Length: 51
Image: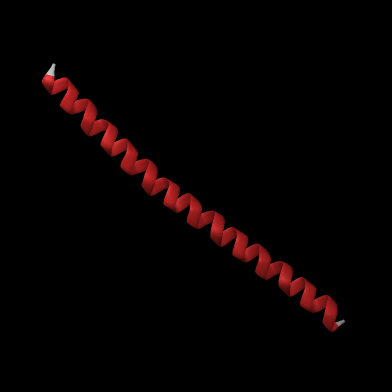
């Protein structure tokens, strides 16, 4: 019983760690996509203004 609980706790901790790591990468990806989008949109606006 005790061994099972320890095993369960270890699995939960590793899952939580993985989720945290994944969420950080997801957030980073979203941020980079957003910045790329705004930069591209900004360039389009600048090009239109120059014309």
